[in-house]
Length: 224
Image 1 (cartoon, rainbow, N blue to C red):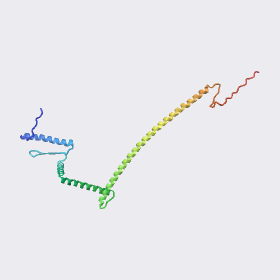
Image 2: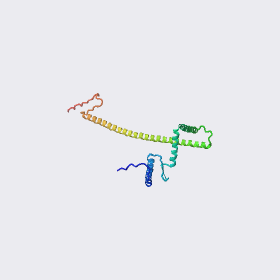
Image 3: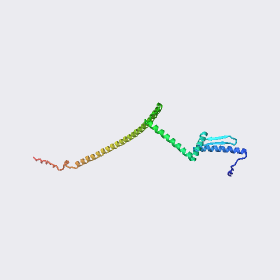
Image 4: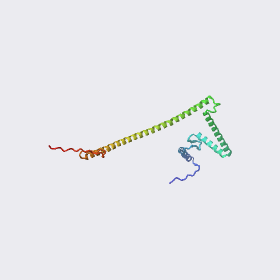
């Protein structure tokens, strides 16, 4: 069977009331810790018992949680009042204008302008800022150049590998041409030798077949 619904009202029995308080207090503190961890929330919990004993939990610090609470309440109260809201935004705008003016003045000083009124210490601080900025620029430039040099080295290695492969291919082609050359000319020699062997009576035919052939007939010998 499930548990029956508990009526939410003050427990008259002091012992039961103390036991319930102890159980519910531990459960509430546990839930507060879980909420702070799981949801990344800033939680502040304050409990006073009926006897005036204090129990508390804060995910950061109780003072920080209370200060944040008062600041949030004050801002919400000001936003609810139209006049206070106008003053609030006017104050924010004035703060932003001052920050912009400071940034512009600092930029002009870094550019070497409007240096009047600065003490030696201020000028030294300005010089240190410029040196730090220049050092950062040099480091960034060196890093970019180093990356470009490394990239060029990799491209050079690839080109060199391609040249080696092309050289191998040219060597193979040259060898194939030599083999083909040998086969062609060896075939011509064999054909020429066969043709000379077929001609009878020791006649040889040169390249020009139109050249006349002179025959010398031997005279018959006289009988004694």
